[in-house]
Each structure stands twice: as structure tokens, then as C-alpha cells.
Amino acid sequence: MCIDRYLAICPHSITQLSCVRKQGVDVTGAWMSSFVTNFVLSVLIMKLSFCDNEINHFFCDSGPVVRNACTDTTSLQLFMFLSSCTLFFSFFIATLSYIFILLAISKIKSVEGRKRVFSTCSSHALVVTIFYGSCMFMYVKPVQYQGADEYDKTVAILNTVVVPLINPYIYTLRNNVIWNIIKSRPK
Image 1: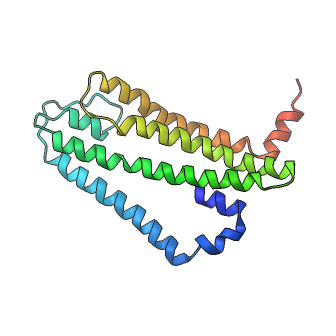
Image 2: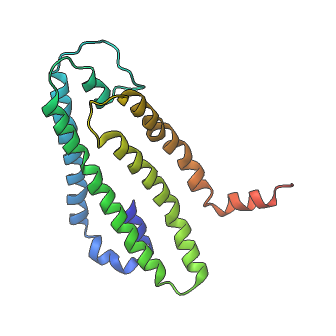
Image 3: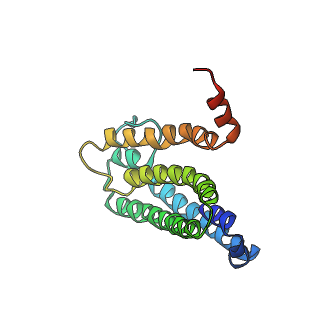
């Protein structure tokens, strides 16, 4: 999405970035790396023996499941930590894309044009920041620590409820029709 926003603002860059073959390789690489990482993690978790049948969480997330294991999970925790560090790479790509967007915005001469472009991208940047921020707080940390269950549940609410809930509002408030309705509403 960040690259899409950049291409929308800088159409001259399309020839550099939009090679269909390159995009196919990028998408396939992202899907395959996600699939392989999650598949390996799932297989390793299935081999564990568990002490309790209940998980202290809203859903069956990897951290609470691993904390429920009776066996040594040190190597599994290391794998989980290293695989979750890929979030930094994704966030870096998104941040880099927004840096290019800000540079492109600074080159726009009209104030109205800068305002339109900035409003288009700022809503997505807000959602990306909240999503990646909550994911990093939830997954890029040691699995075993005191108070992890309550911490994970709090951040999980932000990640699984708040972000999807505010998404429609953020993107709706960019709509001119909605703003006209809000402005014309009797006070």
C-alpha cells in the first residue's frame, strides 16, 4: 500500500517500479516467506506437550500457546523472535516509502496540491503506524516474562479490534461527501 501511494503521487516512477515481473517476484516472495515462517512455527508448536488445556488469551496466538508448554521452548522462542523481526523489515520498507512520499510532497508547488496529497497519505500512514507498532510490541519480545498474558491481551485488543475499527472512520473522513454532510449539519 505504501508503494502504491508513492506511485500515485509520483507517476513518473511507475516505469521504474511497475515491471510486472518484478512485482510478481516481490508478491510471491512476501507470500512464500510468510507461509514458510508460519508453517515451520506451527509444526514446531504442534510437537510440544502442554501442561494446561486453557490458554490465557482471546485467541490461539503463538506466545500464549508456547507459554503453556511443559517442555523447554528456548529454541522455539528464539525462532519466534527472529521470525518476528521481519516486521522491522516490512516497517522499514513502509517508512522508506513514506520518506519518498514526503520528499515528493515537498516538491509540489501549490499549497492545495500538497494538502490533497498529504491528506491522502496521512490516513494510511496512521493505520500502518498503529498496526506495525502494536505488532512489534506484541511479537518482538521474549515469550516468557512476568505479566506477559495481560500485556499480550491488551496489545491484542489494539491490533485485532481497534485498528480494524478505526480503519473505516479514518478513510471515510477523507471523503469530501462526508465532510460536506458534517459541515451542513444543523448545530
